[in-house]
Amino acid sequence: MLSNFVCIDVSVNYNSITGYTCSLSGLTITISNAFTSISIVQDVIITLGGITNPAVALTSDPIIGTIGSDVSNNGVNSMLTFIKTYLTSLSISFPGGIVNRTSDMVCTLVTTNSIPQNGIITVLFPATLVWARDLSINHLIPINKTLACYGITALIDNSTITCQGQYSTQLVTITNAFSSTIPAGSTVIFALSGLFAPPTTEPVDTLSVTTTDNNLNPIDWQSSTISGLSPQTLSTFSIQSTTIFTVNNFAGGLVCSFSLTDTISYKDTFSVYLPSGMTFSYSQSTSTFKLQSGSYNSSNYTLNMVQLTSNPNYALGTSGNVTFIRLKAPPSTRPTNPI
Image 1 (cartoon, rainbow, N blue to C red):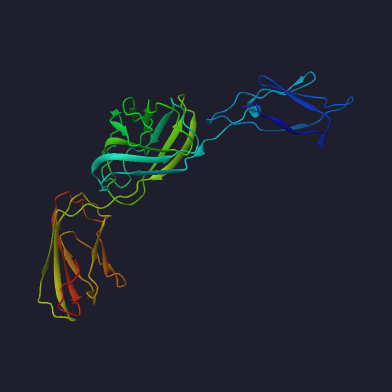
Image 2 (cartoon, rainbow, N blue to C red):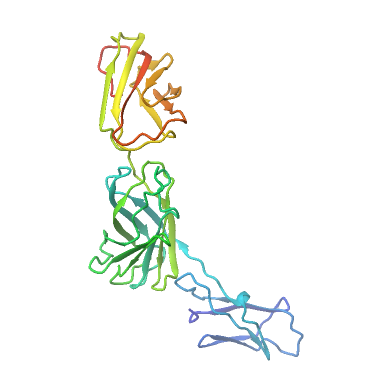
């Protein structure tokens, strides 16, 4: 830490001085010949360079200064606090990327600083231990146990890795993961098994990953939302015309029938994406889900419908339909793209 130190400047009473010498013995730097005569010393500023900071974020012991018989105090103002650095990058995903499916959660990180062989990785989950858009406050993310986990990059030793979660701290702690020091700039990929993805694709859930030494002193860290999620496919979906469509006419009606693949609340909306050329003169719908009037975006042929606030939660497997009237048919009899 001090072996390459240099004295850059010594100022006494805010005046830089010359002719001094600097020496090192153990952890003590001695500055000699700083005073050429008896002086009243009010301030001494010493600027040092070439000092390597600790490899982890911690608070140092007090740094003590001595001038003659005067010794500085050893309170908190004489301590240095080092902060952790950001990981170069971090991403979190679920293989397959389907919302609300149980799978392995994969964390991919690039280190900014090296991780010692006995270093640790921690993953911090939301304080509530519930995904933000989960309708059940009792659907806790299952981390209060020893989790199955594994490395995807060769830097992780799968014969020794251990992952332990705890509800009280919302942390999963990964130990015994490395058989050697992990260099700075390395890509480390690991997975926690048996977790379920958030119930929507909205990136509102933030997790933090931190690398530490074996005493949990932080080295690098970063926060990230979960990326790459896709919606589930409706278990059933069919479309039936209520009338005979004639090209370019506003006479058609459609009934869309489907079954839910997940529980929804009144806050959830319905969107229908129409093929190019099929538009609404105006929209009106009847539905088993009690929808309010929707908004239609003619630039991308999308109708978005909002539920009534009095609607209950609709459970997985609930079947329903939405009827749309006064649709303008496409300009030809050629089959359209899917709705």
